[in-house]
Length: 590
Image (cartoon, rainbow, N blue to C red):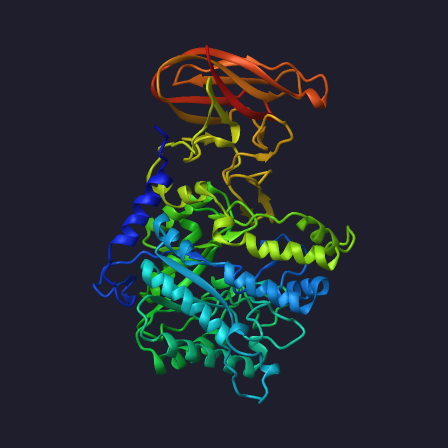
């Protein structure tokens, strides 16, 4: 019988329930003291995912160096393939990026909300492009995208939170976030930009006023502006008053409330959402304050300010954006937040990279485009570049993305369970089993594996980083995984194993049998050793033969002959020296 992992079971059972049963509408989300509740006054813990990259791209998601504003990215693409093909690429990108299948899957995985980062230019023209100064031209495209997504969310019973991610003029000095053109007036330097933002929110609120599956309006993403004009605080981290921000958010609130009195409003402080200095009071009875959390420790101190704000203003708080770290950090963060009844939204759903639920595959020859843009390679032909970008638009489809079960496991199951479970069905043959080194169990560090570097932390005192992973491919744990040129591999290897680190493998056998157990390893020094423990037995140490040359460094060594029982079995591999490289375990029947 094939192994049924947590994800296969939960996906199919959950999808069946989703399609066959009608869940009663919970009504509009609202504030009740320090809680977000539904119309039954029951606490709602928002577990959300952010759709970064759909309506607004950031360069790092596409592995670009240098300027990562969307208008710069678009200009680069246009220089390669022309305006018509570029427009076609963006049309395909937006059409393919999110679908009902993804929304249904998110629900099954455990998410109950989606945070949608919106770019204003899909809804209205920039102020300097308006045919009549001071008026607002409304564009259908953005509203149609929201309408489609909302329809899927309603069917899946998932809340949709609308987030103005790129406001007219841009709301900060971190240019990539809001696709800001620094040569033009910002949101804070132009009353016209402010009035357009206010009008946009009134238009949105009017359109969706009666939609209970719209979970709320996140009025302005990550303001980061130094109102005091301190050159050392361009992003407003240390602003003491933030008066222009609070005045503006009140104006937006007034515009929304003229047409929509029921939806939850979400505000963000200065300094990328975390600086609430000077907030005079809460001006709306249905308002929640949000914060963002990246690269700091998951301890009480890291959320002290927001807990204090919740108490001071007697309002709910929500972590509107977090992520971009390791599975260890993810699990710790969710556990910390939910302990304090703080909902969260992970960032992002998909990009090129492993530390998100979905990974967008890199198109063939995409590196040639990057090399050209980075000044290290020739310019691709128009035909070649067009093929690359149209393939990228195909790769972003859900069916073409890689699902990272390890990330989902860290966000949900590992928060409540320390059990290690199999990562996959290991490859069977007529005589035994191949277990690839990279397919160690799913679970917490200390249960499924042990790695000394487990997360990215910013050490603020020295401005340095503790880096958790040196490979960043295949999986998102602290275990260092890299590509492997060994022809017997699955294309990857566990590398840079340090003395004391270990990996656990759970597998199932249909009948008892005695097996040769061999391990594929690479030795780079004469003193390298490993140890193996089978079904909890005492670890047995084995020394490796040093490689005669680089081409012959990989060796398969027998470490045990063992009678293994029917059913569940485990093998644990320990590094007993540094810089170990590990390819696979081979079990062959005697």
